[in-house]
Image 1 (cartoon, rainbow, N blue to C red):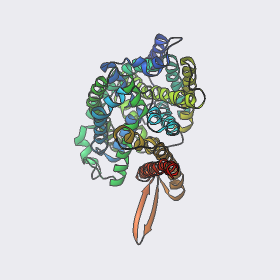
Image 2: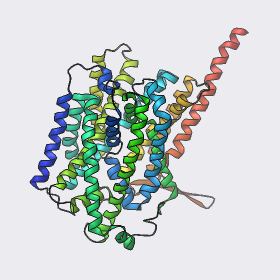
Image 3: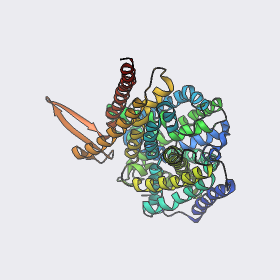
Length: 499
């Protein structure tokens, strides 16, 4: 394992960065902003700011650690089979979704469902959005960074560093988040690029990997189970209903600027994903060469390799970039979760005429609640990809079908269709994640459970990651049944009246 004690130069860089983030929160703090200013920055974001906040938020440590873990275990399929397909979904969002969503002046994702199907659908989707937006992934990653680099317990590191991101989010709202994201974006991209170049030079590049890699490791589609790859890709449908992604679209000055920002961000993500994938692959080579320990945890592979290869000073800059990546995601989703509590739950249930001051107060309560919930969930899972799949499955199963139907389908949509679609998807997810660990056996490599059984002599393996194969069809079925029953309930009173 590389030396975990940092030089005073590296520590100074990290501490300076932390102080800068708090300074931004104080700089943009205003005692009485409007709710719209706090949540969507007054809908004033231009294309350059949107590019930075999109690129930084959606490529947080779950990508830095998750994709590199994927690459470390399975090779370049992490890029060609996983990341490439995810960016095609972003392309659809840019060209088809962005303008339509921005033109409606929504504030949150649940508001879309409330407008199309009524309050019940909005409330269920608010719960799912809140659960998805709790910053468990970022706090998990912050903990891993602290354990590997500072040698302190993961939960202590997540608590201390996470509290800094929580503080500037509470003070500045989305404007503070956007400004810090711009700083974080520059650090994230430059430090990773420098580190990967040095790492490739140190281990001998892809030629060295090819000489020692297992079969299929450098194949674009790899050697991992096909249905597992498709399951990972299926979780990327969450992009189409990601509440933080929607918040950026709602904050843009226009649908055109939102579209342009997403398209530019896609080009940056392509480069970033390749760097992360190459880092995971090179870390594997470093393990084979004995430069890194054989028992290295796959979550820590890229981080350990960067610390091993970077010189004093640049280690601190890299760690600042890593922390920047985590905080850019944590602050954004904490703010979304706070909005779910205030605007999507408190407002319709308790006070439809709530003032801006009340909504901001409850939003801040929601931000703290989400942070605490994320801290509790962060250390339940051992692998970041398993945690990501769980959270993406819950949101996608609950809201993808009714939102896509609401936005694109011109036919009749009953309130019951939206409610049943949301409810069946959410309940199916809960049942699946309870049952599979009871029936299955834990797989330590992927940090998941696999249920193996036979029918008529044919063997089947059901991975915990296969949840969307079951839950998404249930949500669609709920929509169809709800639409049918809703139409019947509409016709019955008419028939009775005519009789």
